[in-house]
Length: 334
Ligand code: HEC
Ligand code: HEC
Image (tube, rainbow, N blue to C red; front, side, top):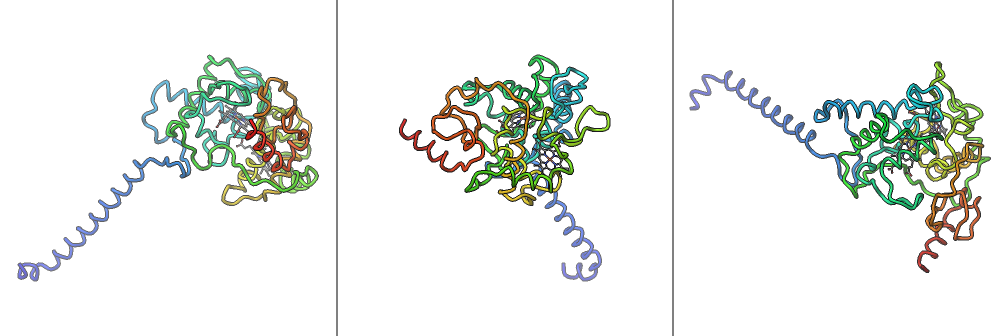
């Protein structure tokens, strides 16, 4: 044996090298298949949205539907805006303006939770809501318009897309980065005057001096969407609540410069900006049917009547701690 090795040592070295290389290859292959097959969903891990490039199971008509749905979410105004090709139903904004990367971005108000959790009971309407009802709400409030017929090709495509985006999330799971982050409260009321100063410095370059945004060259959509004024979301929209607005911009604005890990705004700036933008004029919606049980109104819902004795201004701008404390006290009594 030793004789054999000694006389053939160059061959032995070559065989050893081949052996090491293939071992490494086997290791790599194992590792890769590991990442491809390991489910990314864990309750406390960040969420990875499905991708059309890697999803080979989505085929035929269903795939076409999902692709069209994504297109409608990204470029809503081209189809439903004031110059829309399908119908003129909305204010010219896109779903994606507030659900970034077509609702796939962590901390960008994504759609990860929707499919697993609807239908669900919502206090705003006091009823069980389907995905359709929830999507229609954003058409009527955030897009200040009317929802298309729920049987239409477009509506079905939007629903199919949202279903596909959330397909890997289980009911009861809440992946990190879903929806809008709840950022810490201030110990004072949010201040529109302070917010205006920040607006001029950090937002105006894109969203314009009067919050009107900037239309694209063809006038069919916005390069920079409006933040207030007649073409913006109405006072029944989710972003009209300061907590939603502040959480959204803290992680995402200024656009492409800020992120959850590297925000550009402090909490104070985010709250004051929310106060400033939401103190400007905007379209109004009849909200008389919202929150039929008024004790369920969120702390920052800016329209009375309330059960807690605080004013509309206090609910709108804070400070919120005393309102929440009172809410808990009342809940204990009942
Ligand atoms: C002006 C901003 C804005 C626009 C535009 C907008 N939304 Fe929303 N949307 C919101 C906010 C804010 C919420 C509530 C988030 C929260 O309460 O955590 C929301 C919630 C939702 C939800 C429920 C999410 C959940 O996890 O329960 C769905 C579904 C939805 N939007 C779909 C759409 C669709 C589809 C469009 C376009 C037709 C659209 N939105 C346009 C701001 C917007
Ligand atoms: C570099 C340009 C830019 C700057 C600066 C910027 N934004 Fe935006 N903003 C955008 C774009 C673009 C979108 C829409 C994103 C999309 O559709 O993908 C957007 C969307 C928004 C939205 C949701 C849609 C709407 O119109 O209601 C809000 C709210 C918002 N920005 C607030 C702010 C605030 C507050 C600041 C200042 C801290 C700011 N932005 C700075 C470009 C910008």
